[in-house]
Image (cartoon, rainbow, N blue to C red; front, side, top):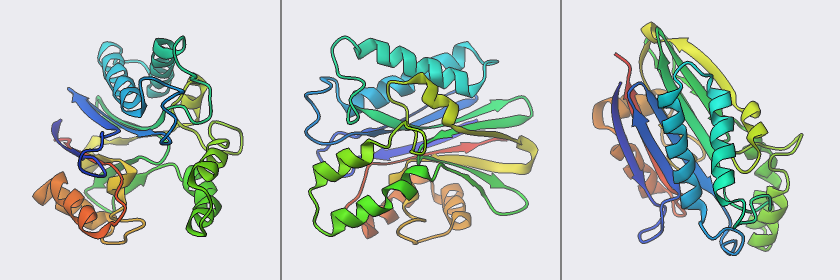
Length: 253
C-alpha cells in the first residue's frame, strides 16, 4: 500500500500525543488521551502510551498476519499495561488511554478496526465513502461539554466523564483492560471496490464535524489530490482550540 502521513501537535511546543505508523499492508493510528495534572499517576505520560501501543501493535501485526485484529489489539493493550503496571497507577480513571484505528490488507479484502473516536474512511469507487468511527464517547460527552461551556471546573468535569470509560453503558478506549478490544468496531471490504483509504484522529476529522468545512467526499478528494497536509492546514485555519491532528492516507492498488 502506498502511504502518506502527516501529524502535528495542537499547539507549537506541545508534545504530540498522536501516533501513526505503517508496515507493508498495514497501518495504525493511535490518538492518546489524558488530563493535564495527571502526571503523578503515570511517570511516562500520554505520548509514551500512544507511541508504545502503536509500535507494539505494528510489531504484532507484522509477526501474526493471520490473527484477528481484535485479539491483536487485546494483546497489545495487555503488553503495554504490563510495561508500566509496577510504576504507574494504570487503573486510575484518568491515567493515559488512547483511541485506535487499524487498517490491514488481507488477500482481496481490507480489514479495519476502530476503538473510540478515531476514523477509518474507505474511499469507494461507486458510492460515497464508508466512514467508520465509534460515536459513544461523543454522545456521552455532550452534557459534560455543555457544563464546560457554562463555566464548570474543567478537571472536575473531565474526571466525571472519564468515570464512564470502559464501563458498561459507557465508552471504550485502549487503557489497562485488554477486554476493551472486544468493544471495537470491526469489518472488511473488497479491495476491488475501493480507490483508497484514510485513518484520521478526531483532531483531523474535525474538518467534517464539528467544523463542517467539508463533507467526506471532498475530504477524500483533497487527500488524493493534495495530501494530508492540506486537510490539516484547513483545520488549523478554522479551529481556535486545535487538538493534535494526524492523517494516514493509503493507496490500495
